[in-house]
Amino acid sequence: MSKNGDPPTSDLYLPDHSEESHNTMGNPSEAAVAYFPTIPNVWATARYQHVMALAQAVEDFTLITHNTPPTRLQTLATRTEHVGGSFREKVQSACQIARERLGNGDPFVTTFHYESALAGFCASTLSKITWVVDIYDAPAQYRFNAPRSHHNISSRVLESVLQRADLGIHSSSPDTPFRYGFRKEFISNGSSVEQTNPFFPPLDPLKLVWIGSPQLDRGGTVLLEALVQTDADVHVNVVGDDYERTASRATELGVDSLLTFHGRLNHSDALEIARNAHVGFALLPSRPDWRFATPIKVGDYLATGTIPMMSDLPGMRFMAGECGRFLEPNASAAATVLDEMASLSQSEFETEYRHVVDRAHQIDWSRIRAQIATKSLTASRCRDSLGTLFTKY
Image (cartoon, rainbow, N blue to C red):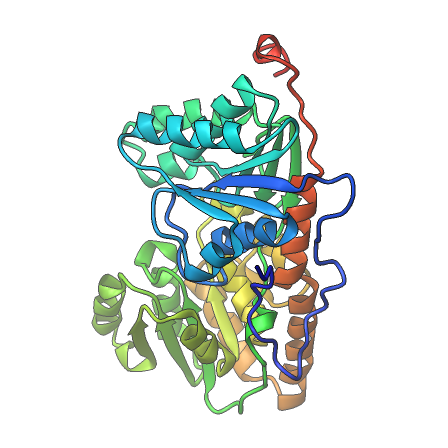
């Protein structure tokens, strides 16, 4: 069975696979992952990439899921185990599968979500499996998204459970206070260099793209008010669903003619729109968990040569390095940056463009996959027995 799950590369920007992970002597030859959130059929997502990384790196790979995973991941997996039923039944089934498939020290990788995390906790408590938890988003998001729900309490219990993982791999800035596991590692999300061939489009007018969740409280209000204030000749392409309130507000402010709402698109079409843009919009408010996140949209902007316009937050800087424009997420600052960028010469813009493409290659997904696989497969067990469970943290 082929272990090659990579898409074709462009003939101009070939990714450097020198750090791609393969199984070597001393590393486990078996691994299992429990990914209960649906793995979207979108190549440039953390869930897709992290599962692919492990599937490519070991000879025997078990994918445990409650849903139908993307075809490519099923092809890469040695086997796919489906679990269903109640919350408790899914946890018990995933735990049992991991214990049956894995030997002492073999990695059992789970997401941070309730069912997956409890499966990892139970399997590593009842056996000598090494539990690795994939913190590709902050678990605290549960209570930030729904502060008046049961998540305000249950998410704190979840975070306590996650501290018992042997290793927590965080897709966030190392400065984050949301840190889990006996050992903690930090990586960025990646850039889709393998799926795009960037070029620099003509500067007439300034073209801005916004990929993600185009909602008023996720940067929409800032963007619309900036369009009111700017003197720049600019057009904005918006990619993502649940945009109706933003579109309505644009009409109220009289800037609706400056925006085109595309709705949800497949990833390749979204990348093509970004490839034809000059600036990528990523102005998130400073919510505690968002401060340290490394948004995948920023990686897509970098990969397409689109200069990211980002909130000045630790996670954004961790991902983009010195590329792009960092600013406070308010309309005045955004309008000022739009005015400045619209006044740049072609050569000045192309200089920034080249820095962006260089940064994209530094964090392309092939390198991130290598890091995920290496860190997971070399993780060591930090709990020796059930009796040490509550004494080491």
